Amino acid sequence: MNARIELTDIDRPREPLAVEVVESNARAMVVAVPGTIMKFELRLSQDGASFEGAIGGRYFRFDPSASTTRERTSAATKGGKVAAA
Image (cartoon, rainbow, N blue to C red; front, side):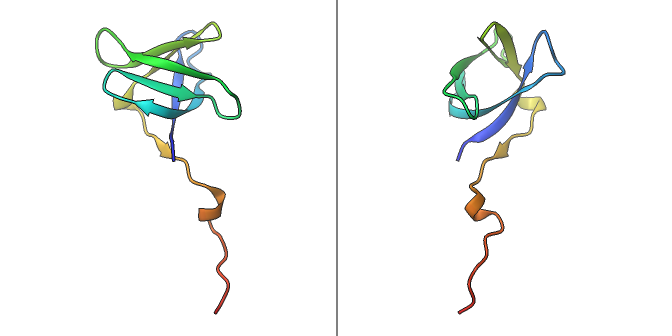
């Protein structure tokens, strides 16, 4: 299960990018773009307040203190029917 987060585009703040966290530690995180094979790394900024990284000419920022993450679950665990015994 990967956490899904939204990254803010520095140049287009109204166009966030939803990604899934593949790996993370205190200084960096690897994220994947759902539905693609694209992965990229975000590194802790110099001020230590956010993670920053670029992909495809776009520069993104993630502020963990201002964000809510959602855990991704499979459809089978959501509202699946149970047969009566």
